[in-house]
Image (cartoon, rainbow, N blue to C red; front, side):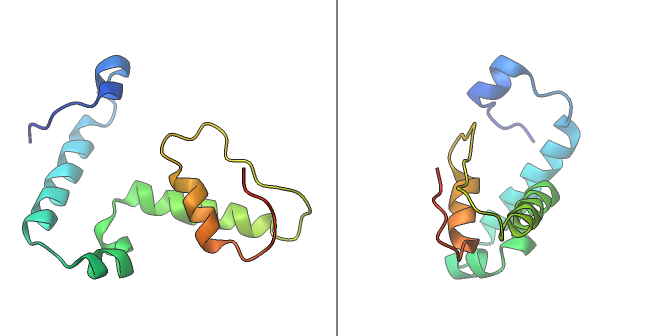
Length: 99
């Protein structure tokens, strides 16, 4: 599949996972073509996401749970679009401050 390269890929290179990335993006395109309902995408996101994103969310959840009983704040450093901070906000039930 020929897809446009992002600014990051143009500047930093994208060869390491190019074959699996192409397969992933082809799968995403086929899912989008089926036009699933937004609610389905949200409620069943593990079905529609790639294994790397799913593993990342599971890892963030486990790290959060390990720090749940520790005093202090949470800092998300080096964010790009803030996805992990939004995820922490979704799973956070305590009163710690998120930075």
